[in-house]
Image (cartoon, rainbow, N blue to C red; front, side, top):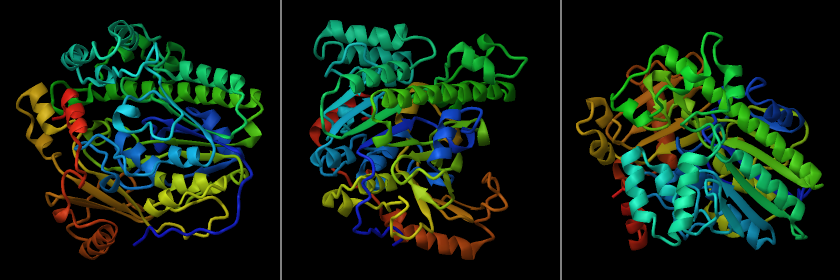
Length: 495
């Protein structure tokens, strides 16, 4: 199996604190000096990983891998079971038990206590709440359309204090400042927290910035920098942004409209990059910068018209799983650009070992390989990704749109991918398969599976060496849902 762990016994503790920042929906192909100069500055002084890959193409399973060091079929959090099971050790738990103060700020409603992501955090703030409350109105925010939002509001409004719930719904749906989906409030809160904390413990800080996610609505001054000269802010922001309706052919988008959407997306990246700069300033002002390992990554990518897709569901192209990754601090301070294959599920082992924390439970469950400079593990020969179940489900799409285009039913399948430097092979549980030669076809447009049968056989063997054969895998990820989880999923419209 390709995922054996290699570790040495030396201590690499040259930093006290760890800050993990996720640029939600950031794809590797769209970061660079124009869109993310702060990230590039950190890379120039730290280490950039040119070939970093997510284990899944959307938030919930990708973050679960990031927190546990396991693949989606192992941690079981995916479209068929939207909860991170309690028997898995998480990265915040490892830091907490090692004596760290653990704080999280999530601006994505999937990354909350409701879905099992609070374990190990002293505090996990919900960036979309105007008033922090245990009652979660995230189901309203996640609603695919107005009908779902209204239904979720009716179900949840009296869960706790209805006035607080109403205030949080009103803020997130109506009053939240144009161009900001929580990043500015998050960096302000973190800056205040850093100044006010009187805790001598080191800290682990996690922050998810969601702005690059649909809908793209950057501040006007950012948008105007990245839109074509002949396009106005009003024209761009008036384009309908509803990926599932687009998938189901309820409406279409022209090449120009996708071009404008890509401009808005790039503007969102620039905006969160500036927020990253504010976060760095906050660490400097609190005299914590030199003692901090800062890691910035995307959790998955995005299709904005590529191959006829919009959003980040239903496939495992590099557009969705190739993500930016930069580490700065401790041993990551030499301006290195690494081109070896790494995965986001390698981060738990890497972060813990960089600061000298040994957590046997997490180490035992993890499929990750630490990639800090002194690690003794071999470089990966391949990386893997999974799409366990459609999100939203085909049933939910039918409930919203009625009869679906035939091609949408083809997406009701489980996918797995193996990627080496030279090749990419994707296989579905319905017999679907694709093979790409990445050296001659980096855009993954030409399927060679019918002619390159030897390479297909080799990569399929490698894929099944990592996972059970698809034909034998349970569609629910072999996770037995608890009754409370079933009720939660029913409330959200998933069952």
